[in-house]
Image 1: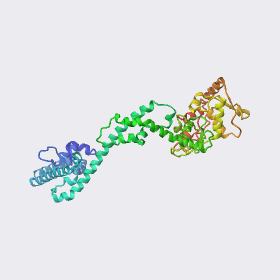
Image 2 (image 1 turned 90 degrees about the vertical axis):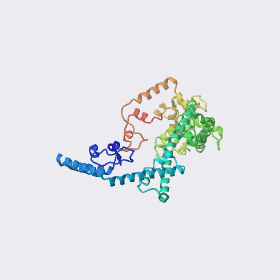
Image 3 (image 1 turned 30 degrees about the vertical axis):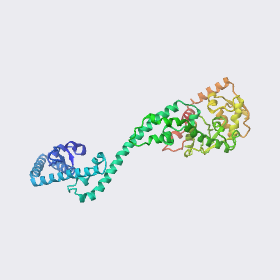
Image 4 (image 1 turned 120 degrees about the vertical axis):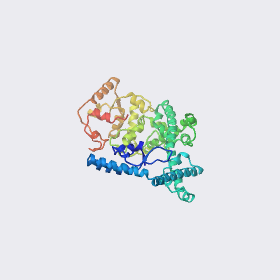
Amino acid sequence: MVSVQNAAKALPHIKNISDLLELLPYWTTSPNHPDKYYPIRAIEQLSVRYAAASAQGQDKLSEFKEKMLAQRKAIRESVAGFKEWEAGLSVADANRKIASAKLLALGYSETDIYSILHSTLVRSRTPLTEARWATVGPQLEALVKQANEHRLGRYRDTTIGGRKQFARERIQIYFDGRPGLEAIFRPTAEAVTRLFPGFKSVVEQPLDALVLPEHFDLAMEALPALLKEYADSKKRHIVRRMVEGGAENVPSPPTEEDLDKVFYATTIFFSKTSKLDMPICVDSVFERRLCWLFNVGLEEVDGTFRRLTFNSKASGAVGALLRCARLEYTTTVEDLDARDLRFHCLGCEGRERKLARSWRDCAHHAKEAKHCTENWELLNDEDASTVRALEASNLNDEVPRFYCNRCPFSWRTHWQFARLRPLGDLVEHLKME
């Protein structure tokens, strides 16, 4: 059934619906309820007949309308039939009241009960006696429980989402106020709300409990220690890879004092799966670079860094660079990047010896070189500035010479990245940031 007000919305494909409703008998839900209701199927059937009559001309359409109006009048004037129909409505109303009362007595929510009162089990014109309730009652209870679960599910998602937002905002404020190298191994604010029990216990309180931002105070007090424990667990995996690769500055087994050595510039790794063969160091984009590199091998980072291999030869070469530049052995990756120094490899011969290299280029060169890479020459500031200027100008070279080895060569997926490209475009494409 559909009301006059909702007929056009329920049957949008029927354009002349107001004309059709004038030709059909209508029903009301009770004598005190004035709204008119029409069977949807009867409207659809009448629309087909109406269109057929209209196609035969205006005379046929007028004849059809007169016939339908006469039928409508006969139905409305049939007292016996109308009273029978009205009695059926009264039975359905009585059934709804009985079912509602019984379900309320069983402790179900009025909101959930109301949502199932339009079920055919209730709308039936068969009186809802005690004998019939024994059959219908369990089915209605199952419907009410299902409605309750659906309603609470929507409410739970909204409530839990709001609580997580409170937690994320406080965690992010804490993160923003504490930048630095330790931030490299922090989980995201979202991950903190999932991983750390103090936040989970507040977020997952009963749905009827009031949770405010200050309820996360205890969890925030414990956050520094938890973050340190989380970061140290990741550092231990990296230190373990250093020991496996033969790092000379880390004993076996490593101690807690060795964890900060992961930040040293001499801690040089390479990826087992990367085709680019670039040195990987623990800097501010360390984990983003891992994802970037491991995507080449279509493998997922598992948190233990098992795809990293420590390269002792490259590490020794960077140690020699630090001595050449008169820098401490504890110099971090970030410090060395900030200095942006340039070096000549004294172990090379000919034109290779004159090649000015960044410290990362030196690490890669040491891995591949067959000769000793312990002797380096530091370029003075003026020469290094000239080299950096030339490097920057080379990025503007528009002649395409390079393919991206990172991207699979597929005309349907990554053709725009795998194609031949100028050096400047390639560098932009491969940026870590």
